[in-house]
Amino acid sequence: MITVSAPGKLMLFGEHAVVYGFPCIVTAVSERLFVSIEETDDGNITVDAPQVTNTRFVDQAIADACDALHITHHGLHISTQSGFSNKYGFGSSSAVTVATVFALATLFQKNADKKTIFDIALHTILSIQGVGSGFDVAAATYGGILTYVKGGAVLEPLHWTMDDVSFVVGYSGVKADTTALVGEVAKKREKQKLTVDRNFEAIGNIVLKAREAGDRGDWETVGKLMNFNQEYLRNLGVSTEKLETMISAAKQAGAYGAKLSGAGGGDCIIALVSKTHVSDVVQALAGCGEVVSVEMNAEGVRIEQKEEKL
Ligand code: PMV
Image 1 (cartoon, rainbow, N blue to C red):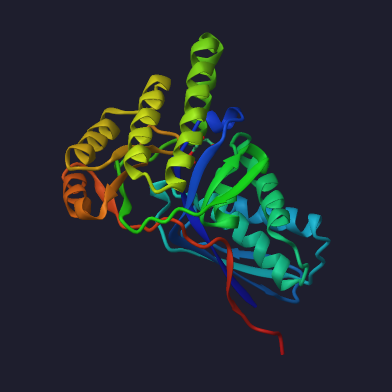
Image 2: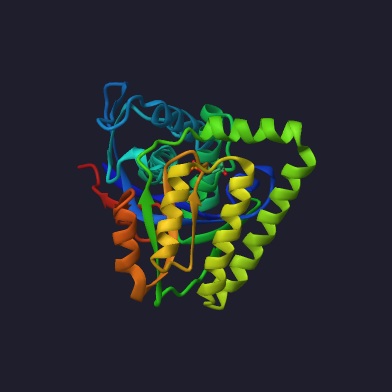
């Protein structure tokens, strides 16, 4: 029997443009999803996932991992437990997929490296969702803060020292439909290709600048770049009144910068705040949304517990 956990994620910079090949910056968050697997001898695969409405990610992850890693078994029992609500958009599908693949690889001693886990999990996610850059799979697998390019073309850990600043997260109360929003942006691009592509390029440049500023600990610049990134997301049509209200509230309370995180349409905003202003920003966001207490830069998929069969 093995229990593993994988972290959720938040997009710091570069959403939507990343779907078109531009880099993004993603962080793993401290909220984790747990998967336990034991081999049985009844030939069946049973999945106990009380917090999810269907088990298709787990089912497909098992099929894909067994196929890719040549795992043969006599039956499996899998149970999942999420430490976070899937309403926040922290990426429970990718976390459960990565955790399932990693748990199977470890239980059956397949010695698979992180890139192999990532590739299998990404294949699972894309076969179900159809669209997506895979940034969430990267965060769940590798953890930390990463520069990421679609498909895992770039997977580069960033070593940001954030002693004097924090990201404060606020939930808008609305669940975002990522697939629909990615589709809407694609439709907009069909109609206004030049404008939308310029937008993506600008976002791509912001990502590169943010990376440099973060590397040198220039948080004021990182905050400004978040505000620029938000302007381009607004131009793409994925922001909402509610998100804008929360972003303004955070900035008025002293945040260096703030933006939506993820597809838009709802889910969360993130604000970059000096430690001295955290309580002001928390209070401001609590007045117009739900503050989610979560840390960035969390560890990637890991073993929690392993029991040898007697
Ligand atoms: O809605 P989320 O948190 O899954 O973020 C989606 C980010 C997009 O760039 C819009 C899509 C993607 O797969 O990268």
